[in-house]
Image 1 (cartoon, rainbow, N blue to C red):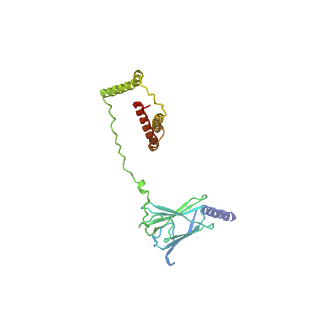
Image 2: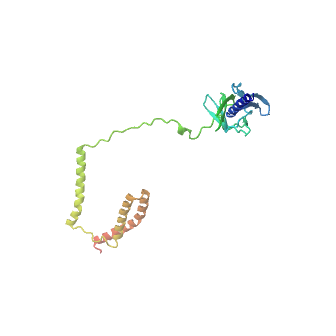
Image 3: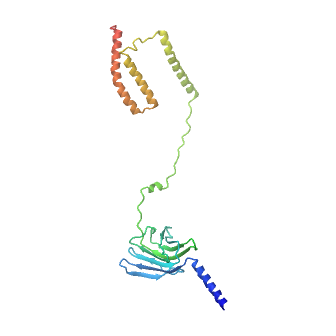
Length: 272
């Protein structure tokens, strides 16, 4: 007799262990109240069959309570099957396994997805590192439609842009050989004339005896400064800087040029 009692007791312990090794949900209940604390609807939830859809007004409050084995994570999922929008709301469960959640439509949580006239499917998800996770489809919930969100200022940047059409120009045609040879011959002729000019100076005896005269040298130096300025512009300067420096150099160059021109006229007149 004693072994049989021991056998049945062992089965009871095994069943209790198996039951404790799974996340269970006990006494799930919901209550809907108005803004003046009037109870509009209250009932116990069935885990096998959904109740009639719940409806909340703009100022109503939904209270959901349940108890069971304390999971590591508990979430309420609000899902709109038409738009595909969903929201996940964490739920705090006490060490004793009791939980309470309130949804106040006067101050809806940020986890509530954008709503329309379609109901939200409310599910309870229990997760644990020790037990197998559980999911319960609780009920369908009608809530007031949310206002449309204001468009983001950068929304147009994410629109689909039209296809870029590239225009490929044909390759540039090369000039005819006759034009090419004519241009090359003219360039060579001009180079030859400029090369012969210093040689002709040596044969004709061109001289500038007063080039380094005290009254001529400032003008010559200022002309050299202009040449240096142009070279500096080609290497480093900007156009505005060249105009500024050139304007500054122009003032002494004008006076030095007038002095040099007057001195040259006196030399030609035989006054010096």
